[in-house]
Image 1 (tube, one colour):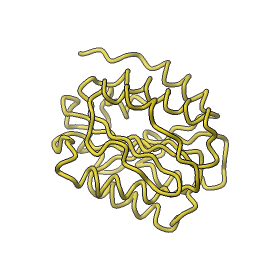
Image 2 (cartoon, rainbow, N blue to C red):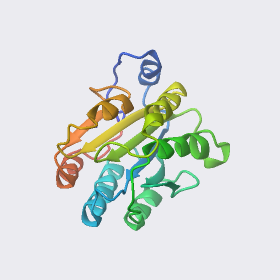
Image 3 (spheres, rainbow, N blue to C red):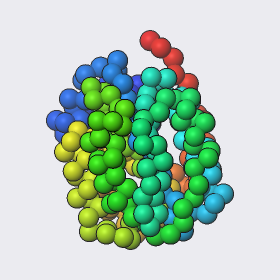
Length: 208
C-alpha cells in the first residue's frame, strides 16, 4: 500500500506511471474508492470492507481528496464531488450495500464521466489520479468492456489499484488486466478480516 499512499518514489514499466512517480509527493492525491457490493459479498463483509477503507483513509496524507463509487448491477456515485479526509471517514460507514450482479465496467465509466472528466467534481487537476477497486472477483455484466474501460482511465493518466478479496483463481486474468501493474497496484487478501488487518498495520501519516 505504500505506493498507493505515495510514501515511496520509484518507477514502473509504463512511462505514464513513471511521470507520476517522479513528480514528488507534494501534489494532491485524488482517490476514488470503487466498492463492489454485489451478491457475493455478504452484508457483514461489506461493512468490514468499509471499515478497512476508513483505516486506510486515516493513514493517508490529510490533503488527499476522495470520491466513492458503489456498484453491483449498476454503479452509483455516492459523492458527486470529492471530499476531504474527515468527510470521507464520516461518510464511509453510511454507504449501503446494493446487492445484485457485478458491473465493474459501469463503475469504471462513471469514474471517468462523472468524476475525473467533470470539472465540477472538485478534484485537483494537477494532482495524482487514483482508483482503488475493492472486489471479490470477476465482473458479469458487460465483462467484455471491463478491461477497455480500465484502459481508457489509464490512458487519461489514472492509476488503478485493485484489492482482490478471496482465494479465487477464476477471473484472475481480468483482475491482473485491471491493475496498472501486478507488483505495485495489485493486493490480494484472504478475506475482509485480512483486509482490515493489513490496513491497521499501516503507520499513520507523518510529515517529512
